[in-house]
Image (cartoon, rainbow, N blue to C red):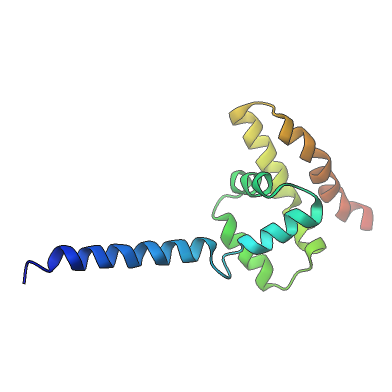
Length: 120
């Protein structure tokens, strides 16, 4: 009976890893929606997800999944994410210092923040 214990523990651990990664990168994880938003606003995916991760208080994937579940258009979701991306730039620069990739995306984020004001 004890001979099978390591096998059972190994199988449970493997299933746990598969479930974890499925939730992180699988359907409805929000990542694919984030990739579409990044392409829509003209920002590299890795920079977009990095800034989003630094700008949110919780899980950026959950945030993206919730925006997707609200059936927002890419424009609407982009505008919603503008302040979060700006906070991500501020926090990233405070932590890592000024970097060229942040300087390249600042105008994009500024446009997203200014967009709701221009509609009024």
